Image (cartoon, rainbow, N blue to C red; front, side):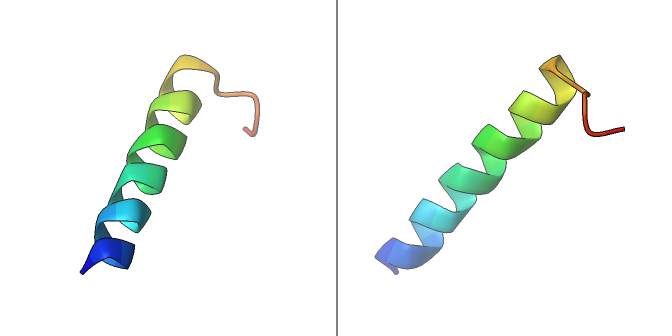
Length: 25
């Protein structure tokens, strides 16, 4: 279940990045 944790961490980071820097939209 290590991959799942890593994926969750990545998603969390990506989500935070999007919130603080919404340059994609």
